[in-house]
Image 1 (cartoon, rainbow, N blue to C red):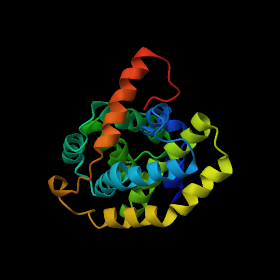
Image 2 (cartoon, helix red, strand yellow; image 1 turned 60 degrees about the vertical axis):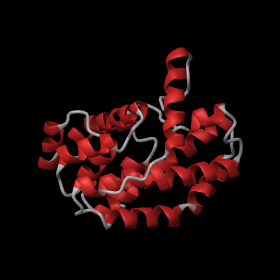
Image 3 (tube, one colour; image 1 turned 30 degrees about the vertical axis):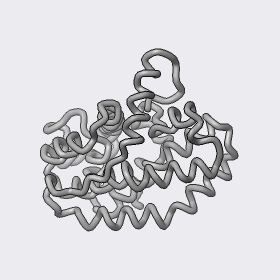
Length: 216
């Protein structure tokens, strides 16, 4: 990964502005994830669905076509809570990117959509199809993994070991996504995750009713 990709993939990067668990907080609340083995299953499922979807759009965003990608990613994200989380993270990155990585491509993206989806702005900033896809795929699992340390009190070294063992699968998802860099936006793959959508909507309702650690 280049420097921009490394920073954007780091869950501690301040551009995001809000803490997101990728549905893990709700899964923990329902006792669907209770230990490292359950966390790994959750991360694999998220990587192969929401992570793969985001990776494809990040790769495609390296070629421009921002307005089309924005519409198509909305259409492939049925959960309003998920759509909003993606745009909140994208907007947070945009604030930092204006200072750290200003470019004509970024200016054009923000002209077309001031609240870009997270994968689209990552693709715009990183520029390389594989690295952009890899960044988003990695981000799809690091957020929940970091959340698991806080939510379940798991050993940070054990959680990092879970992430390290996912590296080949992250790269495989990124490579498959990079193959679609030049695919028309309307023809991009759309792996779905109904379970994650339901968790996101439930978490959003709970978040309005009671204090939660994570926004999503």
